[in-house]
Structures are given as C-alpha cells and as structure tokens.
Image (cartoon, rainbow, N blue to C red):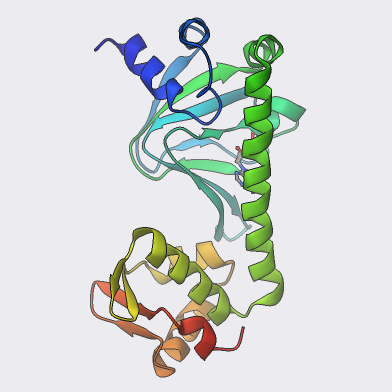
Length: 228
Ligand code: CMP
C-alpha cells in the first residue's frame, strides 16, 4: 500500500475525520505532511509559538507541564487517531504544554489556514472538534477533582486502578500492573517523588498494594480501604 493510501486509512479512523466522504477524505489527505518523532523527542515546548496541529497516526505522545526543577506533570496521553496541538492552532496563543513522544511516533501535520478552510467546507469536522474538546475537558475535570480533594495515596490508588482496568490483568480481587518508577508515577499524580515513595509504603502497609518485583498488585477494593 502506498503512503497516501496508508494516510487515508489512518484518517478514516481518526476522531476528527472519521465521518467524511471518501472523496473529501482523499482531498483533505493531500494537505498533510508526515512527521516521524523518535521516542523521547520533543515535538514542541510549552510557550513556543505554533500554528500547526497534528494527528497521531502511530505511536503515542504525552502533553506535559514542567516546573523550574524539571518535575513533570502529565496532562494527557494522546494515541492513534487523536490530535495534538489544536489549542495554539485555534487561539493563536503559545503552546500550552510540552509534547514528547512516548514511543516512536508518526504524525500527520496540518497548517492552521488549511484546517480553517477544511472546517468551513465540512461542518461535521467542526462538530467532531467540539466533541473531542469536551471529552478532554471532562478528563481534565476528573484530574482536577483528584488534585483538589484527594491525598497522594488517594490519587495513586485512583490512577493505578484506572490503569489496572485499562491495561492490567485481573487476578482474583487484584489488578496486576507493570511497575513504574516513582518519578513516573509522581508525574501522573501531581506529587513529588518523595511523597510518592512515602505513600507507596503506606499503601503497602495497609495491604492494598503489593510489590511482586516487576509488578504491582493493587486491590480492586483499595479505594474503600484508604482515606480519600
Ligand atoms: P497546544 O496548546 O497547541 O500545545 C500543547 C497541546 O497539548 C495542546 O495544544 C493540546 O493538544 C494538548 N493539551 C494541553 N492541555 C491538555 C489537556 N488538559 N488535555 C488534553 N490535551 C491537552
């Protein structure tokens, strides 16, 4: 299969372009530029000027905030079919976050002027953008809830249970999930590495999290066993 057929195939399954006619899809696909981003490379930094948006074709990127010490807070992970960089493209303000490849990633880049032209010609795409942004707002609200109302232990439990349900293996009353470094976990729950290390010890002491070497076993009832 040629590159352009492959791109059309990916766009057909993407959040923004999925309900387009075959003819429109073909026309629109001519406006993209393919970008390959090796794992660990930065697509763009927070505060940079930027007018392009990207559709993730393969791989995965994350949008993160960093403090002055280099501590990271992950806002979102974006995978195949989803888009990234739409905020600066829409409001023309600097990038709201730094975007880094989590894996070797292939993206399709679209310029602001072309995107707006496409939207004017295809109102379905505008509706898809609104729906996708609302879904992101809901996820962000969920994250804000954890930061506002939960302890570090509570945030870790919430995050690990979600991960367990999505990617883990259910074993009796536990989810088995691959262990992460304390620093990586800290970047997901908005806490320092030290606070995460302390909270993991407490969770272990309370019997809701077991370390089995390469994996963690988190109790499916962990939320009931700890203070929020
Ligand atoms: P932009 O501001 O252009 O560059 C950073 C990108 O990260 C942003 O566009 C969005 O694509 C993405 N991003 C920023 N904040 C969030 C969030 N809360 N949820 C999902 N994606 C986000």
